[in-house]
Length: 102
Image 1: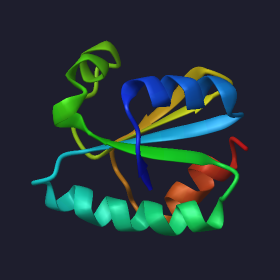
Image 2: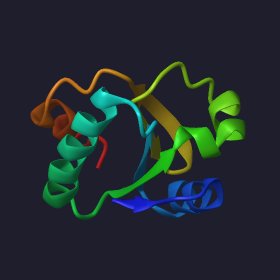
Image 3: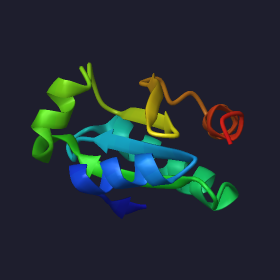
Image 4: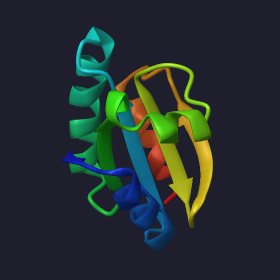
């Protein structure tokens, strides 16, 4: 997964049919597991734009989007935020959440 700036997120969420922005913190153990799960999903859904960002560096976005905790996956479709996922239950769960929006 590529690290995205807030500007890259805005560009990708507007230009792609579906885009996802994975927000994490480096000292978060759950985030490390979530990252590995999303890497698998990214391989299975190559047409979905998925980027990631360290939440510590994008505080303005966190405030604007009312991010409650990490890990967080923001899913946007046609420029509109559709969903925020905080519980990364399993690879099939994440896959289905993204696939049903494609």
